[in-house]
Picture (cartoon, rainbow, N blue to C red):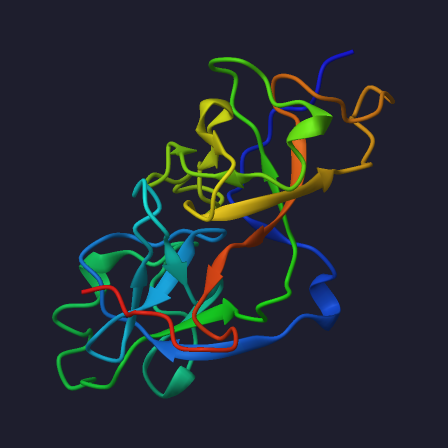
Length: 204
């Protein structure tokens, strides 16, 4: 029994019914589908600091991109290629680029576990995850993020990027159930959401 290896970052569940809003984007880092993003101090959205050991604030997860005036896609690539952000192209096109974000504080996501360290167990449900593996890279062909849960990143505290809710009940391509171990698929929620009640600090 082997879990499918298909990393795609934070994949939103209940896709047709989830809350999605457009935010202006300004970043020096490529953004891939499934990457957590954060509202930053200039009022734009950028990649969240998902490798921090502290409480990581986020506004949601990237699920799409658009160009100026929300016309068409921001780039010819299936991800947000920062080389298309500055300067805008064509040169007369000076408006903002946009990122579509699954930003409901209660949104649940499917995310894959990595293969390093001690595998997560069912008893880890409810704990927080500090580390994400391959957190800043993505697949330039599919557009999906490569990030996975770092199995060694479980903490029993309010630190981290997300909270483990449960092992997902999906079925692998070979007909077996998703199970604990390498490439296990977990359901998570973002732990420190910027739209949750009360004010969260903005990243610099």
